[in-house]
Image (cartoon, rainbow, N blue to C red; front, side):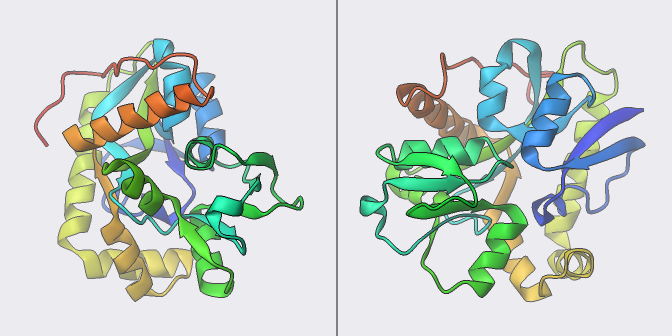
Length: 253
């Protein structure tokens, strides 16, 4: 049975909406899944894009799936009373590697401290970012939107990575995950209702949130990912930009 990682945030609801596959599902925040993939505890999981790039020599990618946005994503927010051009320190979450590096790419002048320490701004991701946007009147800056404004490309936050040696059932599992996303897209109201029941957010809010998320790893997403990795290398967060190595040749989604 494939050991499948699931990010414990609401953003995974469409991928697991009607997943028709025999798997052992293991939940965790992104950095936890990163670690478990690299230690071989998981056969496949969505992991931080930057973490894939840092370990690309021992990982393969599912060719049709990612977690991305083209513009605002809602669940990755920089919260700051100061205008961004005046931010010199950011308190960053320990839950995400890609978002931390993206913050460095977008705000290269700012130093980073752990979340909870005093800083000009704080980085929130996942459900904490969604909740904060509801409850905190402080200005929120969406990193997906900032990235699109800078590059004109989608931002790929996570890729689906598999450690070598590869599990035999990955191609079939990818088919099942893609089918689940398609069904979720075809039944947006039911998806939002079920996710609301599970995660506690209003269904209308979730329906709008899911519309912003992209799961297809197409040519524009790949271009966005490579641009991000090149900029990460320029900021010193990545030694070299790897080629993308896939579990199998991409099938037209």
